Each structure stands twice: as C-alpha cells, then as structure tokens.
Length: 363
Image 1 (cartoon, rainbow, N blue to C red):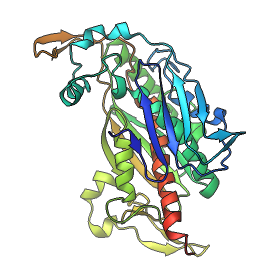
Image 2 (image 1 turned 45 degrees about the vertical axis):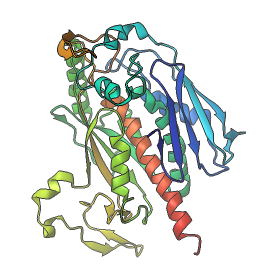
Image 3 (image 1 turned 120 degrees about the vertical axis):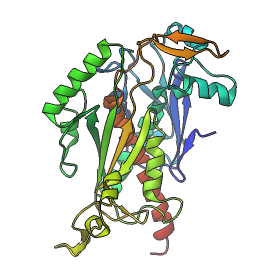
Image 4 (image 1 turned 180 degrees about the horizontal axis):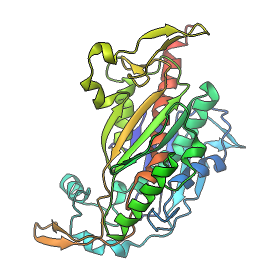
C-alpha cells in the first residue's frame, strides 16, 4: 500500500497526524551498530513543529520511544520499532474540512481513491508522517558514516526568489543550523526569515528549493537499469510532502549545454584515484555513484493549507469558500531539511547493503 520503502534496509511508517502517534519499523539494520535515543532525538528535534517563529505553532516534543531492536545501546539485527506519541492535537480545527476540500491538498484525491479519509489534520497526507522517516534516517546516517565516512548535508537554497550562495563542497552542518531558516548564507537567511514572517501575517504561504550534498560516497552504489541511484533518490525525495521538482547535478541547466561543455573529463589524482575535473553529473553516472559529491535539489511548493479565503467545493460537489483554521507552516522548507537528509541517507544505506551483498561476497 505504499507505506514501505527500501529493499535490504526497509522502513515502514505508520500513524496519522491527529491519531495516537506516529512512528516507524526498520527491518534489515545490521547488528551491533551503536545508536542512542539521543542521536535519533536530535534529528527529530530538527524536524519538530513549534521550533521557531517561522514554523507551525503546534507544540510537540516529538519524544521518541524505542520499542524493539536495540539492546544496551546496540542494534540487534531484528526489527527496530520507534514510536512518537501525538500530544498537542486539536481535531476541532479541522471540522470545516470534513466536507470542504482544501485547494491543492490531498483531501479530494484521498476521497476519490479510498472513499474515506481521516480529515483531522490530513491523516497520512500530513507532514507529521515524516517523523518515522527522520528517525530511520538517523540510523541510516550512522551506518553510512561509520562504514564509509559518508556525510549528508541539506540546506535551504532558495525561498521564493531569494537565493543563497552556498558552496556544496565545504558547507557544514553547523552553518546550516546557525539560523532558523537553515540557509548557510547569513545575509540571505535574514531576508528569507523576513519574507516568511510577512507571508505568514498575510495568511499565505511560500515555497522554495532545498539543496543536498552527500560527500565521501563510495563508488559503485546503484544499479544500471530500473534501480539507478538517481532514480531511487528522485523517488525518495519526491515522496516527501509538498515536493514538485527534482534535479541532480546540472539538472535542467544541462539542457542548455553541448556534450563537450557538459561532459565531466577524467583525471588521476595524487592518490591514484580516478576523479572528474567537473561534477555536472552530480556524482552519478549510468545510475551508479562515481565517488564525487552527490548534489541534488528539490522544489517544495507553498503550503496548501492557508488562512486566506479561497474558492473550493464540498465532498457533495457544492461550491463554497474556505479559510482554513489550524496551525500550519507558512513555509515548509526549514523543517524539510532533515527530511531530505533522511530520505537521501535511506537510499544510500540501502544501496550500500545491496552493493556489498552482490559485489563483495566473492571478493
């Protein structure tokens, strides 16, 4: 039913926005990995609501409970189950949306598909579902870093028409976390925050672009046909709420170049490693990682649920107006940063296990 992601490192998320809780079951995690509740909680704190003046005011601690799969600080190799209980629910805020469809939200399509939906907060279509992904991503990040020194860093690249100048090869997590909008360009960050506050006061919302760089990626991850690495990365990040576009490497800008301009020429570095002079491929060639930085960008649309009055229809097809109540982000991008990192880490961790299983067994 589309709730499970991955092959060898498999995650299944569960729960609804205003139900008892949300969480994840992780199957295929290698045994003996040292992981603590604090490491998982740190990632969840980056995603949680109410963390700053430019996010939803919903107050949730998002405290995680590890129910299985970890003993004395180490993974057992058995399924890991993580639960976060919902506390600050206000289902009454959504009473009007029981009949009225929010424009550009999943309300109408859920009804069309299932004939029933949890209209309290959007149920599974809420970004609250991503708690399980971020928790699983914390574990995937730990595996990637411990095994191969892989580092995944995402950041807000653009809000509406305000675009930061960021060097993917050197940007640090500390720079990303230095401000509430998670843009490493301080001057642009201030302008972004001001814009989000202004849009929020108007009862509206705004979108933008998250960029993500992954460094120290081993060569050989990915498969050459249906499971190309960039294809799996695209599916992973495009499965996040509010996503509307994906680019890797040169992306659409590459269509303006000739082959001779776009090709990444090879050279041998001082360590005898084959490298590329440029990285317009974005770290992936032929669906397989080439050892260069993987650089991708994800477009997030403006939040669909806004306080501004809009035309809509009821589930009976009657034309009406809706000015949505509830607590919603005027811009999803600051909280989307850890979500993007999590999905990228899940893909790379899965492909790392698959690569070693297939290509290392006879070495």
